[in-house]
Amino acid sequence: MKIVLAFFLLIISNISHSESAPTLFDANVIPHASVISHEDCFSGVFSSYKSWKEEMVFGKGIKELAFKQRFPESDFNQYKDTVQCYSFVYEVEQHLVKGFVLYPKGLLNEKLPSIIYNRGGNNVNSHTLKFGNLFFYHFPLALEGNVVISSQYGGAMVWPKNFKGNGGVDEYGGVEVKDVLALIPILDSMPITDPNRIAMFGWSRGSMMSLIAVTKTNRIKTLVLGATPVDLVLSAINRPSLEHDVFKRLIPGYEFDKLALLEERSAIYWPEKIPKDISILMLHGTNDERTSIVPVFKFADTMKSLGVNIELKEFPSGSHTLIESKVSVYRKVLSWFNEHL
Image (cartoon, rainbow, N blue to C red; front, side):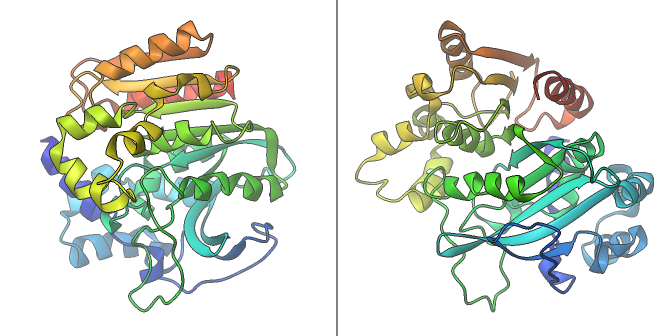
């Protein structure tokens, strides 16, 4: 059942704005100088529920009932009416990166908290954020009164075949962490954001990115981390395919300095670098087939001993994505942000 669901979600979200709509630009929308273009998420094939459904059903072969169950028309219409959503392109040093930003409509005179969501996966296109993925956390959290922003990370395979520019590189926790940190000044440039209320929310690889990021900035108030790989040395042992297909392919110099490079990306080896005034919620399934919960127990205990406000929420028999507990997961995440952000 989990395999079928994962395959459905992969196909259902596998359409991007570059396929469906022209790029527009209004400097007043995201005023930071690094942002060079943007477009409304609800444009092109996503301009109506009907056109999106037809693209998925007739173009991608998704069964109509499955599509309607995963993406109810009422949710689509509510988000379109109440949430402003943009995909955008921004520049970091000498390369271009794609991202998304969402915020509630009608609150332009208020200062809202911001959540930087860091996605999981590596640089392959199927792991990048698509419109359908935004229905998991982005739209619901924006609906609750938050600005939600995400980076695809440099090196992600999100560009059209005729793209001739510099799209950066993905080093799986290396230089592309700068692409996440570059979202902070973009948020600062938006009049609706409160500069003192910024959170990070990551899942899987995105949790690793979040932990690395908070060692390089003092701007993050709280963290929510799902299925966190705190020990990539153990991950390489437990998942040889991950080491072969991802670590060796993306991490520069891996063959020559494997242990040091994995430890650089593994928070369990540098807990003292994490700011002590940050609060952390960790979510993890006890049956996570990709990322073992065992080192997470040790990491959480270590952070507590260092005086960090951390909570580890276990989900008995829970999977890597916790999709089977999505309602209770979202309620916990929302409650955490309401209390700590």
